[in-house]
Structure formats: structure tokens, C-alpha cells
Length: 235
Ligand code: 5RP
Image (cartoon, rainbow, N blue to C red; front, top):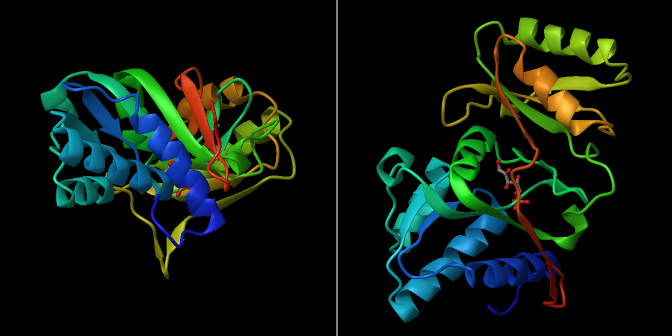
């Protein structure tokens, strides 16, 4: 383990180190996005250097692709790889049924496409990301920039129809401009506090015109690897 890590980075590193043990020579591997996934990319690159593993990797964002390439990993497009053996990614929240909220790093669209094109999705996180019910973390929804405020209003109406009250929808900003995703879309963050039925909410959101994808990952994650600041790991 690198020295001088903060407690949270020790936890992220421990989960990452354990998850990359699942990677075997010849695999096609999806690489997630975020600070935990960045630790995983570093751990994976170290295994490739030390053990000479031959891997083909697909990144879930331009920043992950840049990091992975800078560390010597081979990155191809998902279309070139066609299908993946394993994807390892972080999450913003995970519940006991392995439902996730993702998209805190605005990469949820590519993350969901890559994860669902994989035989197995392993999620790595510090243990504080495990929750009883999803929703304390604002739910990111990627929408087309054209008419985003009308899309937000439709989301409001659908939430009210599902009796989800007291919510707040905010356009994610980067400085004084709306943040743009890798696909040049924008993100609406839904502050819901608690999501009673993640599956119903996900289906509802994805049928609204203008919504590209939402950050609820239902029936996608196969394994959750949680790291603790003392280096312990639970799966
Ligand atoms: C990016 C994501 C990330 O995996 C999620 O935000 C967790 O990030 P971090 O590991 O930095 O806490 O979904 O879109």
C-alpha cells in the first residue's frame, strides 16, 4: 500500500487491490470512473507490469482512458472489444440488494453501457457507501441539453404522480456553465432523500423524453467489495 494515504484512500485502495485479484490473463476488462476506480486502474497497471498479464481494457470516460493509457494499459473501444469479462467500477451508494446510485462523476451513461456489456460487474467502494436505502446521495440523470428545463419539469410532474414529495432538481454546474458529459449532455441531480422503489423510479425516468439515462443501477452489480480504513475488506 502506498504510504501517507488518508483513511478514506486506504479504504478505497484496499477494495481496489482485492478487486483486481479477480482479473486473469487474457481478460477483457471494463474500467470505471471516479477516485476509487482510479485506484483500481493503478493497482491493475501494477499487476500488468509485474506479472505481464495481457489485458484488453475499455474505459468508461475520457479521464479513465487517459489515466489507463498513461500507465501502459491497452484501451480499445467497446465496439472493438464487443463484450467484456469483467467491469470494476465505483459507486456513490449501494444497498443490500446491490442496487446502486452512480454518476457522481458524470460518467453514468458509459458506465451503464460498459457494465451491462460485461459478464460480471464488481463494485468497489469505501464501506461508508453502503446504505439501507438509496437516495441520500442525489440521483444523477443525464439529459439532452435541448429543452433540459422542460425535461426537468416533466420529471417533477412524474415524481409528484408517484407521491415523491419534497424533492429538489438541480442542473449540475461546472463553474458558471452547465457541466457537459463525455456525450455532451447535461446532468440533473435529483435530491430525493430516500428512494422507496428504485426499479419503478428508474423505469419512470427513462420513459421521459429528453432523459438519456439515469444513475440507478438495478440488477447490474454482481459483487460489492467494501474497503475499510484499516485495510480490511468485505465482499
Ligand atoms: C462516476 C461514478 C463514480 O463511480 C462514483 O461517483 C464514485 O466515485 P468515487 O469513487 O470518487 O467516490 O459513478 O460517474
